[in-house]
Each structure stands twice: as C-alpha cells, then as structure tokens.
Image 1 (cartoon, rainbow, N blue to C red):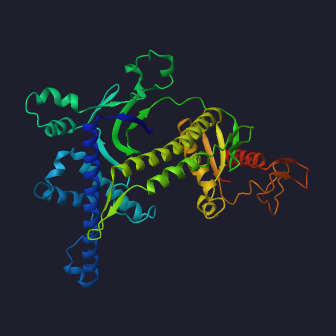
Image 2: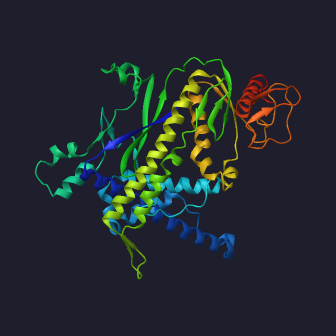
Image 3: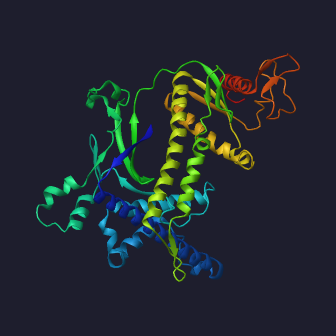
Length: 431
C-alpha cells in the first residue's frame, strides 16, 4: 500500500535561501519546458497540415526529449541551475509530462505557466538522493550551497554534512517491526505505525504560508486489522457536516464563517500596503510590509483549512475503525457551488474532502465504501416503507411520511436510506 507522511521542517535562514532557490529553479525549468512544448507542437502541427506524409520528419513533443534538450544547453545558457540538486530539474519535467498527460486524458485543463507568488512552491527529491533520520533530513547540495555563500574554503568536508541537514519537527511515523524501538513517552506510542516492510519512494519539499514541509512517499506492507461488521450510511450536509445512521453526528464547525471578520481585516490591511507597478516592464514591486502582511493573510487561510481538516480526519478515522461497510452519496458539488446564497457555506463544509478521506481510510482498514448515484432519492425516500416523495424542499427539516406515518429528522432518514443501499450492494454487488 502506498501512503505518505507530511512533516513540518525547521530550516535556518541560510537553508531557506537554498529551498527558495530550488523552488525557483523548478518553476523556471517547468516554464521553459511549457514554452518549448508549445513551440514544437505548433511546428509539428504545421508540418502535418502542409507537408506530404512521406516528407514529414517532426514528432510530437514529450517530456523526456525536452529534458535531454535542456541538459544539452544547460551548462552554457543556464549554469545557475547547477547550484541545486539535479532532482529539481528531473522533477520539473516529470510534472510537465504528467500535466500534459492529464490534459489529453480529459482529467485537467491545459497546463499554465507557473508564476512566482501564485503557484504552489515545491520541488521533488528522489529516494536515492536524500537521507532521513530521527528528526532530520539531509538534502543534496544544501551544505555545498551554504559554504559557497559563506565563501568558506577551510574544513568544507567537515561542515558540509552538518550544514546540509534540516531539522524536522517529528520523526518518520512508519517503522519496520524488527527495527522498531518502543517510544519512551506514552503519548508517542500512537504516532508509531509498525509495518512488516517499508520502502521510501520519494519526497517533496513544499512551502505553505512561509512554513516548509516535507512529504515522504512510502510503500508499506502491514497486516490488515480485523474488519468490523457494522453497516452504516453517512449523509453530508450544511447544518450538520455529517450524520451517521447509528446516531453519530459531526457538527459543522464553519471555520471560515468564524474567522471571516478577522480575515477581512487582514486583507484590508494588505490592500493598503505599498506596491508600485512599472508602466514600462509591467512588473510590480512590493514593499517589505506588503510581504509581511501577505504572510499573515496566508497563515490565517492555513489556520482555517487546518481546523476543517483536523475535524474531518478525526471523524473519518473513527468511522473507518468502527464500521465495516459505509454507504455515501455522490454529490454534485460544482452544481451546489453555483447557488449564490449557499456557495460560501458549501465551500466551508468541504464535502468533497470528507468523501476523499473516507475513501482512503476505509480502503486502508479493509472495509467497503459504496457511493450511490447522485440521483439516488436518499432524502425523498422513506426509510420505513420506501415511498418516495415528489418534493422535499430545504426548509422542511423533518421528514413526514404520509403512507406509514414515520416522523424523523430528514438527514437521519437519508443516512438510513444510504445504509440500506450499502446492505443491498453487499448482498447483490451488481444491483
């Protein structure tokens, strides 16, 4: 099973300079490949339209050919790219190839150029180029870069290893059973996950709200826990974030609504900071106070997202551990976002993220997750007799069945219908 562990990094200011340079190099290489791909594709398309088939020599562009072309001119035109590890360049072309593959497969839009300050800053490390320890990671090229910046000549070999090591806020959670040592503190025992075997595949260093993170991708093999038997249905909504058919409820924390006043104040302060646009070049120069305020706004957004993510992680983990089969409904999130009066509340609830967490965790725990069609009448259908109503407006919070007299909360009724749908799928998988 493939998984990942995201860890907060604590780099020094000198190490941050290298990490920023690596992200900038990756962004430049990606944009170079994107421009070259477009140029070569236009030439290939023109040849296909104007030259007979027997005389054509051009082939469609691909990431591997572009990487070879870049490496051939790299030393002469872009020698500064050698200041960072070669994984940065390789990862940029891999990302470019995946972006175009997703576009041609219809899974994503056409690849865009990455702009400093707006794109997600990150770079890739292959598994044979870094070393991860208890609370540290050795990044290739980092120690040499710092020594070059200091212009230090003596004792370079002794200091390179120390300067190239970045502190981590916690150690890797996944440990092989024969190499594991019991944690000294009781609170750290639940953080350690024992595996029969573990292999580190790669790592990604990223920056979010001026904080640096390391995401380690692993392939682990561990014994599956015994699958619990209960079959439940989960209905997601706005009043309550999730309602389980056995009575459990996840209250909608509404983190964006709670922090909206503070967020608006920070954004108004940001709009008043100094920024000057050059009319000739079109580039905008931001003041240092603008950059400081931008980080404050970004960290407030990160706080809101972390509150939402933390609550959903705890809820979905409990569900995956206690329920063997879960029924959920496939919602048209984009259609719900088109409603001007509900769009902010729908975005704040993050229903799609909750469904994604459940898919991952139920599969890891050995359970079953059945997702019904978005046309399944979970809300309009009576969980007692099966009669389906013609209409069920949002203002009616209680379900009244005219056939059998059932009176129940509409969300609980929908979750019971989803539990019955999951039981049907267990008995008749083709239904």
